[in-house]
Length: 150
Image (cartoon, rainbow, N blue to C red; front, side, top):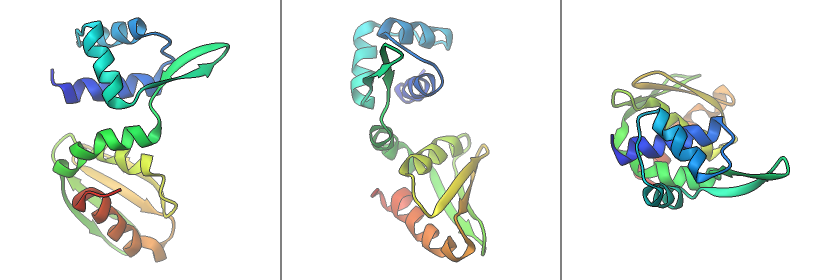
């Protein structure tokens, strides 16, 4: 399994479970088929910008949105095939299996003009805040997804 897949799994685990130690995270990765050493996991966590925050009298690991976006940027640029829109909705075409990653990248940007995203396998539906914002959001998406700046 690739480093990219492992990083994605780490992000998914930290988003959905309370992880209080590297050993807990290593075990969760093991359940998903990733066998990693403590050194590799520590490096991965540093690369992803994982930090510890206070939680219920203890600590838990988390990935701040800005770090998550930065780690996804190299991935999404290569996965976007095109962007189409009508008056109301925007469709981002991706490589097969990439729509969720691209959707996560768009979501963590927290753009005020985007209500949300819905990802399929190779298609991401982006819902603008209003029909009057559609063209503006298309320009924004091209900028962050294709031109490479957030």
